[in-house]
Image (cartoon, rainbow, N blue to C red; front, side, top):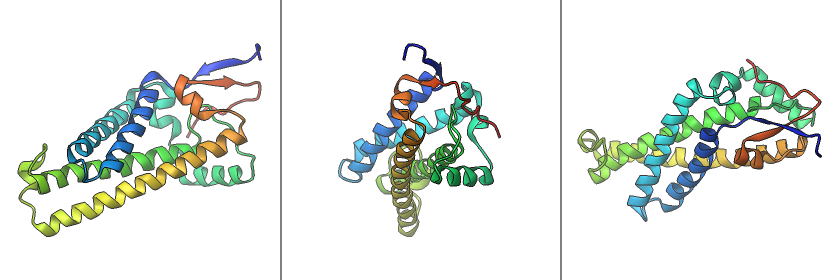
Length: 198
């Protein structure tokens, strides 16, 4: 145990972003129309976090950058096949499947958040887009509501897939990925953990 060495993988911003997003999305999802003010502010927080994450994906630390974990679809599929056969390589940062999940969740949550802001302006006449969105017809507002609800539910589905993936990867590679996202460190093993690359 004493010979184990650890390497910093997840920087403080990534860890704060991850856990704050978990809380904000959960609050937004469970409040829905019942507590519109709380729902709205949780949605604003989600949107602000996503914008910050997009910026950090370009200028942040090594494993936070999109260039570190965006892989080709062929690589993602091959990695998932290897995972099913319990022979997938270990990555210090996001593995190909995890990287694809990050991109999917960002896109889905962005659509959910933006349509939510539009809907708030159209139905409540409030928010930063109220002047523009309040001119929408009832049919347009209903259309935005359908898109908003679909992507909110799709985001929740992605969350479940993400949790399942974390459990599988934690078991396959014998490491606690949840704990790693709390303190930011992963074990530097004698066997080579793959440095993420295109």
